[in-house]
Length: 129
Image (cartoon, rainbow, N blue to C red; front, side, top):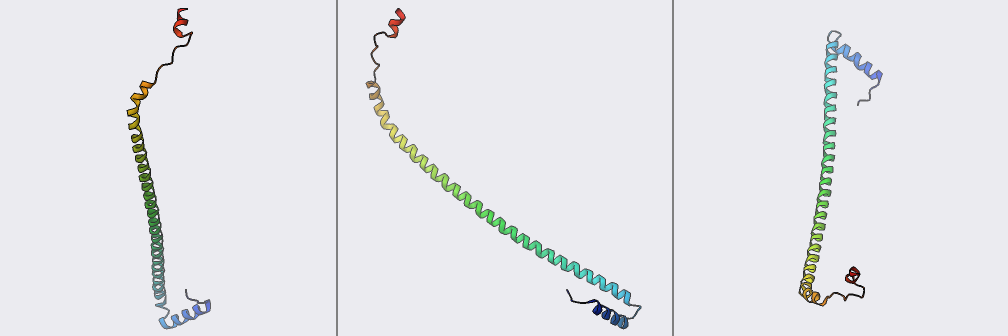
């Protein structure tokens, strides 16, 4: 944080000893240590909060991208489902339209169909023999 070397720290300690005095110096050093610890904890908490906010923002972006992908997939699925449904309905209507003329012609078709004549050596003759 501060670029202080050992020699600068020794000068600061010597000035503090002369200004504060040897009697109050330990108490002031202890108070300074507590304040420095609080400052470090505060800075660490701020860094942790910032990191949490960044991670939360990334998670929100990921959630939004997943939701958009899911909605695209849902809309694609719905459109394919509707397309397939309309194709099936059209095919069913086409089959129904084709089936109606066959129903009318089936009676005539059955009348035209006849059994073939029995050949010589039919089943009845074989059974009698």
